[in-house]
Length: 502
Ligand code: V55
Ligand code: FE
Image (cartoon, rainbow, N blue to C red):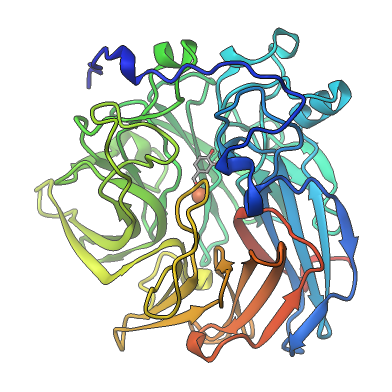
C-alpha cells in the first residue's frame, strides 16, 4: 500500500532544543505527573483493612519516570526512563520497592548529569555523543516467563530484571536467538501450554513493514521465528492470541521515516489508510499464510482483552477508539480533530466463509481502557472483564493530565449476567491498570482479587488497593498505603511467591 502524505508544512511539529538544566512546565512534568526519581524501599507499609492471609507474591509494574529534564520541551510521557514498582505481599504484610531499569541510556545520561537522548524513538534528535548507543527506556511493561522477569519497551530488546531485588541483569536476547532490534511490550502467554508468543515491528530500527514473530516455549527457549509484512509501517502496540492464531490489528498510526528525520512526531494518524486485521496461524510456517481482513472504518485498537475461537469463527475482544491517539500523535489530515475515548468491542471473523468482512459488536456501553482478564483462561472464551474507566454518576471527573482524563473507577463486566459493576476510588483518586490474582491456583475463572495502584492526587501520594474481583462496588478489602508518591505507570503483573526467594 503506497503512502501518499499531504505536504502541509503547518502540520510539522519540529522539536526545538531547550536548556536542559530545568524541567519543562508542561502537563507531562507537572503536578501528580511530575517525575519522582526516587529509588528505595519502604518495609511494613500501613494497611487499612486486611490483606488476604493467603496472598503470597509480588505486584510488579513498569512506569516512565524521566530521570533528567528532556532535551526537548514537548517531550512525551512515553519517553520517560523505566522505573519499576514492586509491592511484595506475604503473611498479611506489604513492602514497597522502586528501582530504575539500568538502561544504557540512563547510565550514559547519569554520567553526563543531563539528557543526551532526544525525542521519542527519534535517534536523529540525539546528542551526537550517543550515536549508536541503545536508546531503550525499558518503560512499558514486565513479563515473567520461564523463570525470567523482563522489562519491555516495544522500540527495543528486553532487559532482564531480578524479581527479588529489581536489579537490572542486562539486555536479553534469548541466547542470541532474538534477531529483531525490537520486542513487543505485550507478549501473550498461552496458559494451556505455557508458550509465550511475542513479536517485533520496525525490526531493523527503522520504519518498515517487516514483523517478526517469536515462539518461546514454557522453559523460556525461543524455538521458532517467523516473518510477515504488515500492510504499511505503523505502531503495533498489542496483539491477540487464540488457540490456533496470533492476530494483529494494524491501525493507521503511521511512521514515515522522512518525517522522523525532520524531527517531527514519530507517529501520525492517517485515517485515509484502512485498519487491517492480520490472522496468522500458530502452526509452523503459519506466517506464510497470514490472512488480511479490512475493518469497516479506520479505527485504533488501544489494548486487547483476549481472542477465542468457536468453530470457524474467530472472536477478538479489545478496546477501540474512533480516532488516533491524538493526545500524543497528530492527525495528519485534521489537526483540529479531538481524541475520542475507547469502547470495548468484539470483532468476529468467519475464517471459513471465504468472505473478508469483520462484524463488530459493542461488548458493553461504557468507556474504558487498560483491559484485564483472568489470564489462566486466555485463548478461551471468558466471562469476566475488568478495566479502568470513569463514571460521572459515582464521582466527578479529574482534571486532564498528559494522557487525558485520569480514571476515577475500575469496571467489571460479567458476560453471563451482563451486569457492569464499578469501584469508585474516592475524591481526587485515580486507579490505574487492574491486575487479577486468583484466590487459589485452581479457583474458577474470576474468583480472586483485583489489584490496582491508586493515585491520591490531593495528598501527592499513592496506594495499592486490593478488591474482591467480583464485588468491586463493595470497596477495598485492603488499602496498602505508600508514604510517598510513585509515578503513574503502564502495565504490571503478579509474580507468585513460589517464584521469589525473599
Ligand atoms: C504505548 C506505550 C508506550 C509506547 C507506545 O500504551 C505505546 C501505549 C510506554 O510506552 O512506547
Ligand atoms: Fe500497553
